Image (cartoon, rainbow, N blue to C red; front, side, top):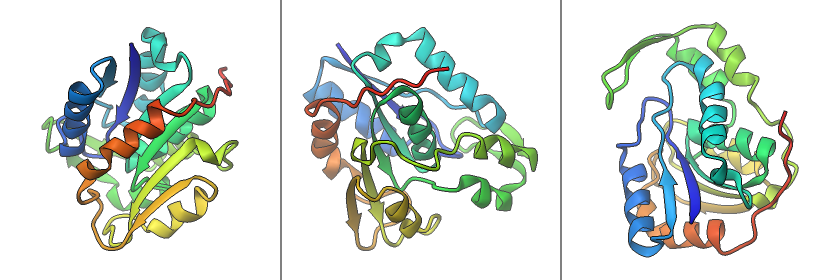
Length: 203
C-alpha cells in the first residue's frame, strides 16, 4: 500500500472538486494507493501541529518519502512538509507568501464547506510565516502547476520560487486550475513512478 496526502487550500475542504477528483482517480487507477484528505483547521495556529499529528499517527505516509498534493495554501503547507520530512510534492497554483495575502482577510469568515465561523487575526501572519521554506534543498522534488490568469495569486512568484522544479505553466485558467483532472495521470506518474527524495529533517 502506498499513501498520498492531499492538502486543500484556505476556505476549502476535502469536499472540494479537486480533492474529490483526486480520490476518484487514484481509487480507479491505483487501487493500492490510499489518498488522505484531512480537513485542515481554519485556524492557522493549529495547522502545523495538526499536520505533524497526522503523520505521527500514520507513519506509513512518510515511508519511502512523503508524497503530497497541495492546492493554494495547501501548496505552501506541502512545501513545509517536504522540506521537513523529505519526499516530493505536486503543487497546484501554490501560495508563496500567504502571510502577506491573508492580511487582506483579517476578520471573521465562514468556511463555505464546513459552515464553521472563525477569525483571522494579525498574529496568524507570524504563525504562517514560521512555516515558510525560503530555500528548497531539492527543487526537482516539486512538480508545480500554474495558470497565468490565477485571480488570487501571482503565478510569477511561484515560477521564481520553484525554479529547477518540474514547472507546468498554462496560459489563462484561474485559481481553481481549470481542467485539473486532465493532469492526474502525470501527477500520479510523478509521485509514484519516480523514486521519492529521502531527506529527513525531523525535529
